[in-house]
Amino acid sequence: MELTHVLARAFSSVAVSIDLADDDDIDPDTATDIIEPAAALFKELSEDDRRALAAIIVEVSELESNPVRKRSMLNLPEEIGLLEEE
Image 1 (tube, helix red, strand yellow):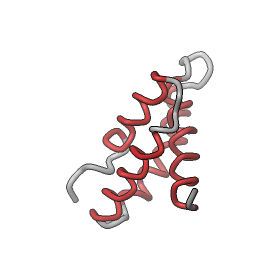
Image 2 (cartoon, helix red, strand yellow):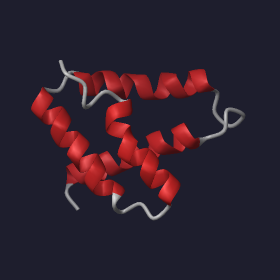
Image 3 (cartoon, helix red, strand yellow):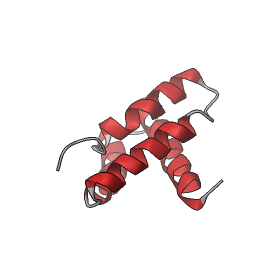
């Protein structure tokens, strides 16, 4: 697996785990504080690079065996702003 795919899969896995965690396990404000800096960095990418990263996230989501985690991972590109227009 290529480095970009490993990094995208690792980020996606962490983001999905945070997203699916109970509020008692991870405070929602803390969850936002963890994810927002990464999402802000992604917004600095060109539109083509954001779309490429979104495609990689969708691609690596196919490796996820848990259907709930997979669904959350498939929604991740939109949720973190990768598919928004500049």
